[in-house]
Length: 206
Image 1 (spheres, rainbow, N blue to C red):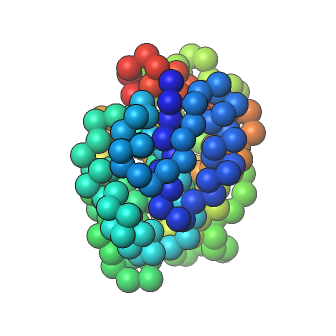
Image 2 (image 1 turned 30 degrees about the vertical axis):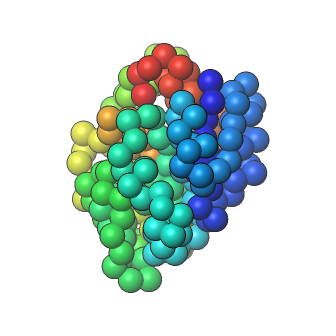
Image 3 (image 1 turned 120 degrees about the horizontal axis):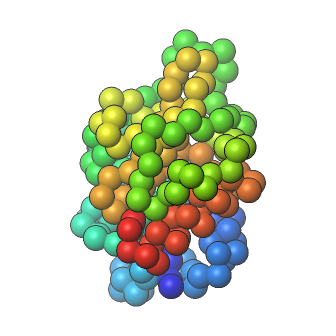
């Protein structure tokens, strides 16, 4: 199986690439659509500001490629946020519109960014995740100042409580999955989730 990491100049590509290689899959890192088409699934990473990321996706001609793909795609951190309709970060910016909702800055909390380990609580179980086989410890690593709000609750898979704000941690819709945290930096549970998603790709359930 081959997973394509979408390189648009705004991702921590090395850590994502290395985490995927630990799953014994072939990994390509590219922004070339023809090369990416050879992959069985995609990972959209992201670090930085939402408007800059959308600009880079436009410049690399990848917006329609991502919107129209029927293959499984996993957005990580900013990569997840880009899958929503729009963001308030810096300036109101249109996103990819896969998921309903907007990305907004945390308000009324003691510290921004939301950074560090937090516990995930599952609301729904996507077909690629075996709820009966989850580790007891479900802490994952977050680093973000903006979060998804106004989403379709049917698409919220898991949340983390940050000072009484229910932060969407995992979202899923059709062939698209998003993880607000960094699974590649989230220890055993992060790798458990990445492994489950990759196995779901192999089994055709993502």
